[in-house]
Length: 167
Image (tube, rainbow, N blue to C red; front, side, top):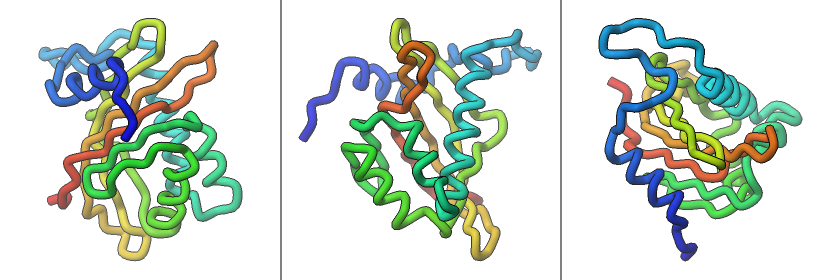
């Protein structure tokens, strides 16, 4: 088993705490937040990553999806287990996702937290919709850790948890 890094332990603690100092989130008064470049960037990256994920059965899309992940990405899934590499994660995606369902971000749930000298934490809720029925029957929470290496953003860790029926 791989040893968890202090950064990853902090991410898990943040996700579990439900901390509310997110970048780009609405204030208690319900006013629109000021422009936030980090939130906007991570939100755009989320859209790109999952556009490729949602169309991964089409030529080139699984490889495009892969390009957003570090080779040594760790992916923690409460019902599927852990994968320790991009190659292992993609094999699972190809087998269980491509052509079966799509992921949608639940509007208003995205939060972004900066990580000093590293990147950002993205947190939110997503739902899963079956291609054959069109029904969005699954719901889960997620945390994605992004590394910014001189302007190149890559996903280094993913937690997808709390999978449940979408009532």
